[in-house]
Length: 168
Image 1 (cartoon, rainbow, N blue to C red):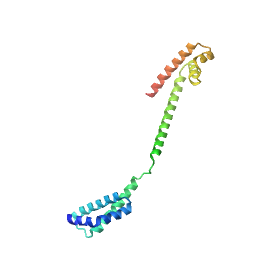
Image 2 (tube, rainbow, N blue to C red):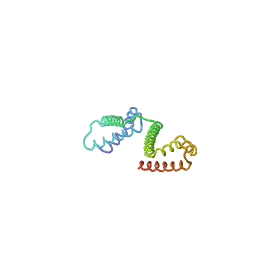
Image 3 (cartoon, helix red, strand yellow):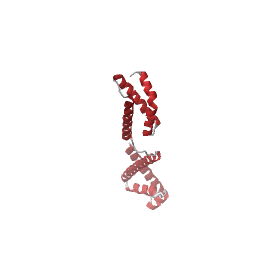
Image 4 (spheres, helix red, strand yellow):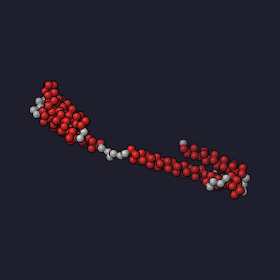
């Protein structure tokens, strides 16, 4: 098929073929792409062998390309999800991850505290968990304020060391 024959076919059939495809796919850009691909295939095939019914061949090729496109889109299709919904999922995952990390830290803290002497554990619990002041802890346990500070200092240093080691 000569270039002049191809040009004549294009001028005669391109707009009707594009209209036919646009009605099917409701996307003028896709229809134009399919028309162009149809004419390319006609040109390739026409160089190799004689085509008796060129307009029929064009419509058949365009229809087949459309079916192929729809099949590919169906395979690629995923349900549309709003960005907000995706952000919510990410937030939930981050929250779950944060909860898991916090739980691991609580377990590591609990383990580290259990390794301390009982008196140090008790002082730590009263001050850091129950919120008592150094003076209140000292009065309750009948020890000096400086003794409370020493036990707390020892407990905090040991706990921090253990938590840092657990992170590595």
